[in-house]
Image (cartoon, rainbow, N blue to C red; front, side, top):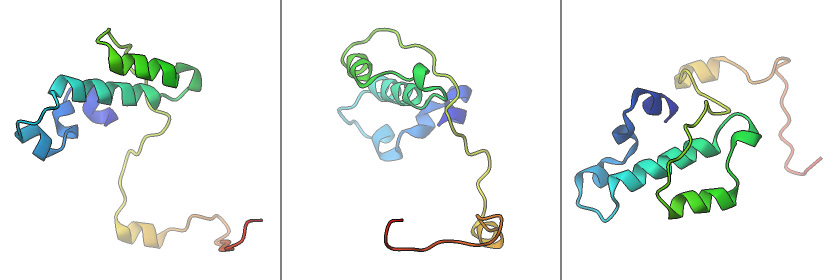
Length: 101
């Protein structure tokens, strides 16, 4: 979503069936929701809007601030084989307890 935002290609984020149908959802409303979602994912918590602010943003058409980079980004998607070949633990140990510690 962040990459598409930076490229200005938000249409790619909208499901094809919504994009091609004459649905009641206006594309500008979808883009606004995406914009607000990106504001909620900003790296620093102080930059993120409160839920009260989000509700206000959804209920009016005021200009929104530009989102900053999200707190996490997936730069590369690994294949299933790559995931199996690597371990998530440095010492190759894992804990699989069903009861909380």
